Amino acid sequence: MGVRVAVIGATGLVGRTLVQVLQERRFPVRDLRLFASERSAGTRLRFHDEELPVEAFRPERLRGIELSLWSAGAALSRQYAWEVARRDCLVVDNSSAWRHDPRVPLVVPEVNPEAVTRHEGVLSNPNCATIQLVLVLAPVARRWGIRRVVVATYQSISGAGQKGIEQLQAELAGQTPAQRVAPWGIAFTTAFHQLDADGWSEEERKIVAETRRILGKPDLALTATCVRLPTLGGHAEAVWVETASPIELEELRHCLRQQPGIVVLDDPAAQRYPHPALVSGRDEVFVGRLRRDESVPAGFSCWIVADNLRKGAATNAVQIAELLCGCPPTPAQQ
Ligand SMILES: NC(=O)c1ccc[n+]([C@@H]2O[C@H](COP(=O)([O-])OP(=O)(O)OC[C@H]3O[C@@H](n4cnc5c(N)ncnc54)[C@H](OP(=O)(O)O)[C@@H]3O)[C@@H](O)[C@H]2O)c1
Image (cartoon, rainbow, N blue to C red):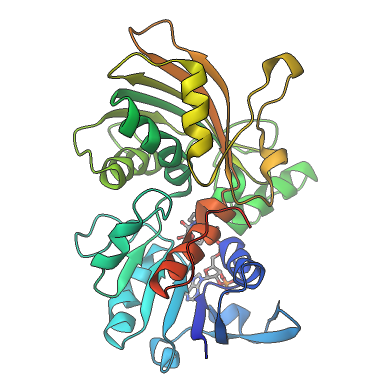
């Protein structure tokens, strides 16, 4: 019994977390195969009490695999995801390759689990910054309606993968990084993702487009500014939400507490609020700093923090896999 599973990109930050989350959540794995690039072939990774070998990825090597969890970047997913899916192997993709393809559901299990049923073999995990945002926006949209959202992100450099961490560590050690994901440096400063000719980063566009798609609100007024920080893990977001009807903070807190996957940590008198170090290793999305926004007729502002490698990537992907495989529904909490 159980599912034959593959992790593609197993040696990366998200891939290693996927292996860990499959183990922690006791996903019904019958057989686990691990893939990465040629560079990593022969590396071993621990899963339960076994040391499993990492193989160089080739699509034909997935023969017999029923479920594949991908975190090897958009280029590989674009090239091979459908070829693998056509061979009856489900694909849950962490990259941005298929997030706007109408054949591919974009799923946050606590928000739109029903989308899972409409797949054609490939399913997409949203961007990490989107996942934590929609978890908070969804119950607000249902209860009060949303007129406009403004988001400013404070994202860990781990969002750029292993290369991001290595750049930070090299700069902190006074060395020249082998590769730069932040061209002007990241230690003791901030960086933007690559900007396009219109002045937007792809990350900012992803938040806008993906949030609209997941919430089923193609016209939602939403804007974002995304910033990378020299933190090792955890993305934070300052968010301003203008609601369609008046909102009471106590009712808002109550409403958010009812939302599976959210922890409300909002105790200003005790200086208690979420921050990246606090949420590290946690699967829930934390929200605090809930305040009335006096600049609009009805609205509030808040601070949303989550572990980008877990709920922002691996945990959400494994939750999608659980839905696909008919595992009992579980929120992000273990
Ligand atoms: N980091 C985050 O917070 C986050 C959150 C959500 C989604 N994502 C997405 O998840 C994906 C992985 O991100 P990451 O942060 O884990 O990156 P990473 O640390 O750089 O890891 C990338 C992984 O992909 C593998 N890989 C690269 N090229 C490959 C190829 N041609 N064939 C097979 N394997 C290949 C690498 O193998 P080698 O070790 O052999 O090079 C490594 O295992 C990206 O699409 C990213 O956008 C990341």
